[in-house]
Each structure stands twice: as C-alpha cells, then as structure tokens.
Image (cartoon, rainbow, N blue to C red; front, side, top):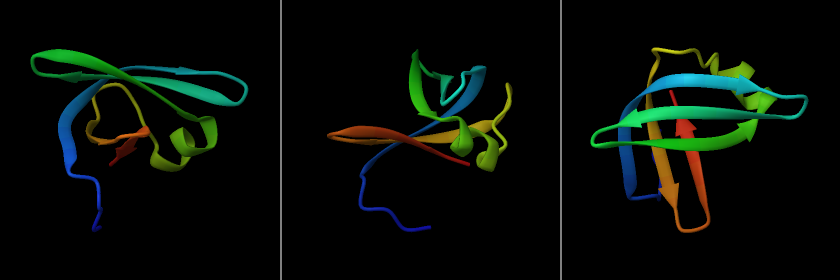
Length: 67
C-alpha cells in the first residue's frame, strides 16, 4: 500500500469502543496514546481488536488506521 501521508506511527490497539455508527480506537504509541474515531464499518472491515499492531496515519485534516 502506498500513501501520500508522511506521518505514520506504529502502535498497539489498547481499546475499541463500538457505537451505532462510529467506533473509538485507542492506540498506544510510545511515548503516549492516540484515539481515532472511525466508522464502525471500517472497524469491522479491519477486524480491529485489542492487542492488534496497527499503523496510525496522520494527515493534516484526519487520522487513519491501517492494519
């Protein structure tokens, strides 16, 4: 996968909170933690679970998660 976003950080999912439409994904990235809001459909498609290793992709207007 090629991306134009240059800010990519590896981390581990520490919590996933699903809602009716959106999901909140907490990711431990040393030396801190980030939280990303994604659609619940995207969470299902990625199969995100606690303990998963992910890449947090940061653009100036949004934060994405890739697995």
